[in-house]
Image (tube, rainbow, N blue to C red):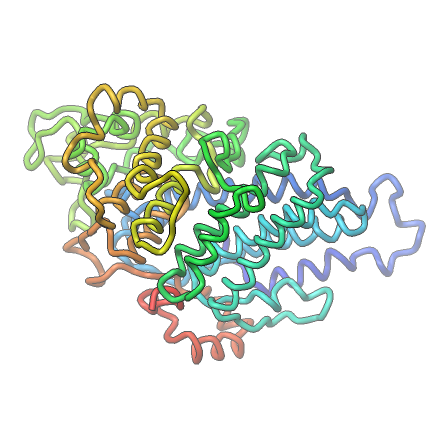
Length: 489
């Protein structure tokens, strides 16, 4: 994440909006209008959100703490030597969305206000999922109120606001979803129904996330499930919220592709032992799609399989199993700048299946014509289909294996969800810290004996927003990677 501050963003926003107000008319370029159409910022908001979210999932802390990758060099991510982490990129995207919505008011195109609220909810929910309490209600107001030192909102208040924002966006698009420029909509090509499905599916994600502490979580989920005409949700892979990679330049290429990651960086990104072992134990056909076999098994010292994952937080991970030629990197599938299966995903159908399966399994929710077992199966099948191995899973009797056949436990369900959520944001980490599954093990060289549960607030906050920062600490607790946020308590 880029190292700036909220104050910087406020100053930039103020300067941007006031840069021409004192100019003489002669200095105004009539060929360069001071306002733009909202659809221009719509494309930017969608692609920036999706690409940043995917990059964060592939080669940042979420990929390591979610136990998908192991870095054999520069492995502070999995050693838990985490310092404060900047959040400016998320606020920058929020500013783009807010600008788009202001333009939509001027242009009388309310559809961009509704879709903008869905994108805003996505970005801010990810922000609070990572940091906990954060500036929200007073953020991005430097121009309108002059406030460049926003107070922090409690996570509970942020969640309640965003859940309502998503619900309202669905209703707004239901009442009037016309006018989305299909060419500007990099996510759904102008289909308002798809945006509504995303809004309600995101609500399911958030409600499950806070279900431990929010009394109405399951009743609100049931409301959605009971009326899919009013609250449509994802029901196949065709509903997936994903943006394709053009593969033309660095900014629109897959994060592991040649335009973004040099050969040495990709080579040091090994498949984790947790991931490889879970796939091997289940004879999972996704293994060959995701993971490359070792260069040679001759000379292996610990693991003689063709696929060898590297444990986390070792003292000398590069020499594990006899050296890097005896370790599996990610497959060439993840080395491309673009491919059919390489998209920047905000949310996919398989996740919705697993959310519903967990809700039904808890006994708090019912889904017409479905059981927890069938929803669990749907989630796995959707992932298999996504990666082109659906038929192979059937022919290999994947679903009949003891480790795969539904047994009614949260452990099994979340483990399968974790597998399917490979490089889907921070979902693997978020589910682990919420449920304790899969049962990851802290490595021997880890800086601490427990997994982090949050990011530390940016260092810049203590420099430019100190009073608000101190007030937040007094309410939230210590600014520490081990301090639990509201919905984890």
